[in-house]
Length: 78
Image (tube, rainbow, N blue to C red; front, side, top):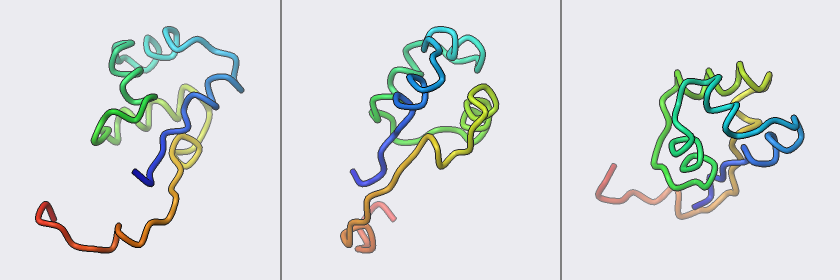
């Protein structure tokens, strides 16, 4: 998948524990772990906003994108 979650790098740079971040944001450690690993299909904007507020960052600091021409192809899910 060309969209990658870069939250781990930010957690390391900030020197915080994932457990503490999950508590501050109000999500379970399991939910945070799934997001960190990229195993989720989406995230609520409210959760994204809380992560950004807790980390003092912007959404682009948590996500990255590698261009893939296949992303422009229409599939049956659209």
